[in-house]
Amino acid sequence: MTPLGGTGGFMEHKNINVKLKVWKQKNSQTAGRFETYEAKNISTEMSFLEMFDVLNEELISDGKEPITFDHDCREGICGTCSMYINGRPHGPWHATTTCQLHMRAFNDGETIVVEPWRANAFPVIKDLMVDRTAFERIIQAGGFISVNTGNAVDANAIPVDKDKADASFAAAACIGCGACVAACKNSSAMLFVSAKVTHLALLPQGEPERRTRALNMVAQMDKEGFGGCTNTGACEAVCPKEISIDNIARLNKEYLAAGLLSEK
Image (tube, rainbow, N blue to C red):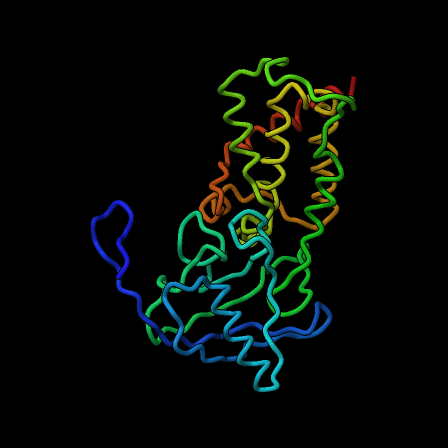
């Protein structure tokens, strides 16, 4: 028994058995299919990825092909653990990445359906792993600032309004996992792009490229094949870092202003 933080209660450790319907696909040029696996005697204290680790060890021991999935930090920072779980990006818990999702979120005997992101701009590499380098190309198009090399400037050398600093830091929390794209019926990347534009546009360090940043990043987003914003808020609802759709309004403002200035 383990005490629950702040509740005064206790949570019993137990093991469960679950059935997994996992999407298997060799690459983006081949057709995929669901395959069923049995994950038995799984501790409810395991993370979802640890459950996959255990299952893959068993598959390898039996001479079978393991399930391919992406992961890195396993601390909710890198955003690579991207997958659909029972129809929701990153699974049922709010503001949680897949690596932070634990098996206590599921019931004994439950069937769990696991799929990769479904977006043309995120082609399947294999099974649950997709290619998200489209995001990297969008960043390369304008998600940077011009800085002088040399010694670091004192932290208080450039005053920044606290409200703007807080909003910038909140936008910078985006980890680029792609859950926003996966949740959007148009596979839009507007929440991601708006977060990256916002966190630089609100700071004085982002001023040198401000006129071109929104134009270039939106142009690259369109080039990558992402769809238009649906205004339904599905992106914000599934974002593990709770990035606000207010940033999309700011991106539209930045884009309009940059377009008008470029015509002069």
